[in-house]
Length: 126
Length: 362
Image (cartoon, rainbow over all chains, first blue to last red; front, top):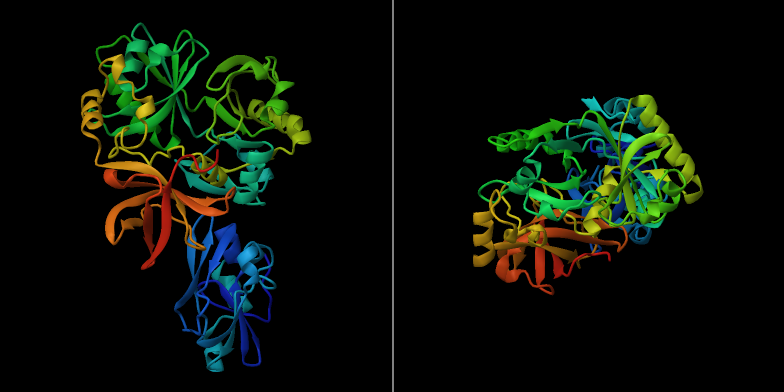
């Protein structure tokens, strides 16, 4: 399994990639592996904000359904609509084309509370 | 945790193993459930279903015993025939669904892996006063299900009998890879397929596994797990014990009237079942298709009609063939008509669905 060093991670297996005040959010390789085949990603089209720790959408996999929780507060800039036709991208490229949502980070200090790659690896026993 | 005799084969194929019915079973292999689903629909896949239970019934009263504990008419079975049936409690609740094999000199009952102990105890109790010898053969019998349109081509040259002559719900005795077995044209996928029952140790079992995969190589054969077993059966609307049927459901409301042969005479639950049939049950197992976007129904989600709760989902998943959410549900008898628009409730929201004719995939 692959865990890029430049990302921040949550206990709920989301990652956030930070570029200035912009953040891309997705699911970790571990999470997609546990979920198995992802078939739908349901994020409200008109969502404007995401709220730290709150669900902003659901992932339907064959085996189960999971909430996607916001790692930080933010304003929604873009939803990855390419996943509507190709949800399996979340399985195949979880840190790249499989990103879920792009946000403007409201308070960058919230990032400090997230895990770095080493802490995340400990969490999942890697 | 018990392991099946094919454990090493699963590990070699990098299966994801889970606990199921007291056994460690493969839920999927690396390419995933949807891929495996399509393998079975298009080519041929092999399930290890050795967790299933097999009971042998012998003795002068063997037929009378099977007639008493099962709801279908086992007297119609000739040697070589297999029958889908169910066992009921006196109150009509379903103890288990099962296959009944007429093995000429005895009957073989094939029951769900999760119910083996319960079923054996129930069967044993019912042998009282009868000349019946009941034997639990589960630990001695290995079972592989070879399923898919290419299953016949895979097995035909391998077995010493002409597999193409075995009709649906029939079996032949023969040898495959020099191992004696029951070659049964049955399965839980709705595809052309065979189930292979045979005895033997790890070397024998792995020998059969490898021979089947060698023969299937030209037909894109792959090992497939319990995950796709569920999506495959759901597309064909086969009941899953513990989800769609259990001791609180009767065969009439579960849509199993077609295997309930009240004309055969008295059997466990027959009085109650006859009354349910006459009075019409309160609810009915139906199939529904999700119309809402990006939603998969799941076990126990509530179902409502114009705001009024009318039932609950018993099985739900995505249909990989249709690309839509599908499911089975109990709904109030008066709301069971196909075309009825229903709502499925999950996460505080309502998702539109419609009751449809079965099966989902022809």
